[in-house]
Image 1 (cartoon, one colour):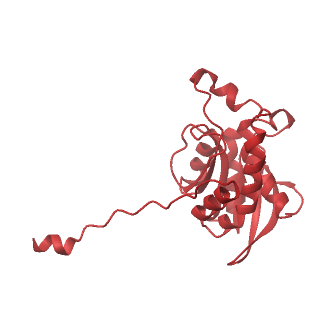
Image 2: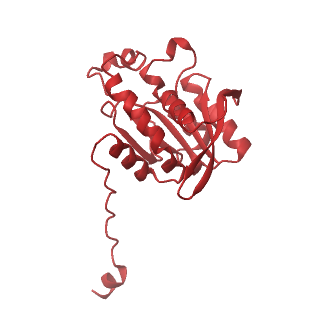
Image 3: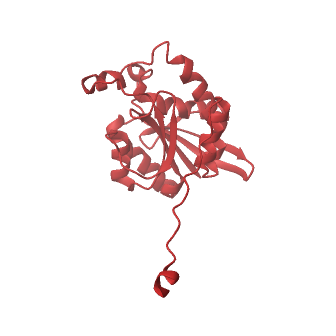
Amino acid sequence: MLLLVGLGNPGRDYAGHRHNVGFMAVDAIASRHRFGPWKKQFKAEVAEGFLDTPKGRFKVLALKPQTYMNLSGEAVQAAAHFYRIDPSDIVVLYDELDLAAGKIRARTGGGAAGHNGIRSIAAMLGPDFRRVRIGIAHPGDKARVTGHVLGNFNKDDAAWLEPLLDAMADAAPFLAMSDDIGFMNKVAVLRGEPEEKPKAEKPKPNKAAEAKE
């Protein structure tokens, strides 16, 4: 089972905030792939469904913690423990200040970079879960960060936000196949952007040859 986690803060007052783009992304995926109804469990809202891929059908539990951002790990840990889900099968979608608006990056592990939701999950499960960072751009001034993150997306944002969420929903089966590069490339193709090139591995030193010299 894939545990697909969107991060955000619960309640109407927060629904349109940039900090809630993780909730928005998981909602888009669950809607596109016709997951079951949302219900309350694990201090979260959860919905079950399937993602159809070339490698078969994958069961997915979509989860939106309702604990507020800085305690997100409680809900994720509870669900992961109940279903015995490994960190490699947990994908967390969340907002990223240090990415341009509308850009995404997927990877496994790493630091929290000041994100309280990621910090909470890492404290509960360790850092080796998968992440999809969704760029909301930095406002340019540290003093404006809180207002930017906890502010609503504006009309100009709609030009990139809605197409991005649509593309992420279409590309979601790649996440089920643990193909993060494929996910990013599918999103890029759907948005008419260049594909992500895999990083070239550094050649490993030939120890046998070194020993002969």
